[in-house]
Image (tube, rainbow, N blue to C red):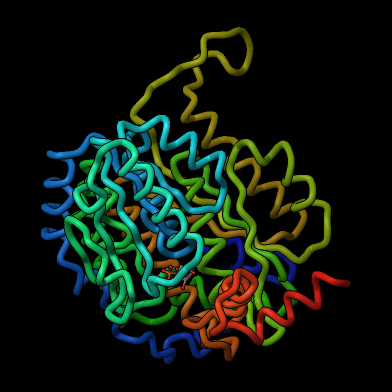
Length: 408
Ligand code: PA5
């Protein structure tokens, strides 16, 4: 993986930064806690691979029940590396969608993996209960078809399941390179050991100077641009397999950095599709955005266009690449800062490194902004409010607020 910051650092765009400014940002002194920085080294990928393979021997489909950080890491890895696998993510409260899913999978031969660090998240607890009922109705003992990944103090630890895994000691959104993010991929046959190795490759740069450490450089760049008025950060991979990575980025960036009246708004986009929608705003709208392109590298499918005119003989890969170059040029022309993250293919190693790098970038951006990138008080308040509204007396204070807002 290579991160090209030249459009930002070589002052190709007005309002860009200098290398010195990034080097002197203090990013090299940010203390990234060991539980996050060393997660790849602490993850026993071999054990996760075995657990996934054992489940795949017995079951034909895998359904992950979790939300936020208990879903997006797994979805990112599966969508990038095994997009056709029978692995599904229930990460919402949507009765129609859940009913459709339960009708479409072979219940007897589906394993439901319940993921919740707290074990108290209403969406997950409720979906799990509905699934248990559906299994019973189908004559299946729920404990036979469920596994749980949860925190040490979670009520889900008492659930009767085939297996209980311990949630890594990091906030959910930093857990992609642990059982949370990797069990679904292991079920799908992804080489999860290589994904973790990719994360470790990112960690090798840990002690390098800011400009040689992709995570720190990205965190510092985003932060400094933010100080200069960049309010939105657009993540734009040029591959549909990486669309979920953009969702993951939106979550980690928003939930970690949106605090104390500060934080950039993360925006999800996909190239080339969004060249025909968002691009107009990016180029000609308020000059307050950073665009990050993720170049997936070449594709194995060698489709070549046979046509008259300039497209004749051009492969779809070449077209995609030209579209990315052209879009970057249009941004530079209008002084919109942009970064290019180049992958050497959408491989397990590259996906692992990409995830790790953006985890570090998030921590660095947060520390430089003076916020805690590991808590999420706004999200927690909302969770408690929902519980209170549904009658949980331990959240009575929040219930009152919900009631008064509802009345207005
Ligand atoms: O990143 C986070 O901390 C959150 O997005 C959580 O992952 C999300 O709220 C789900 O929490 P839990 O795993 O406790 O169910």
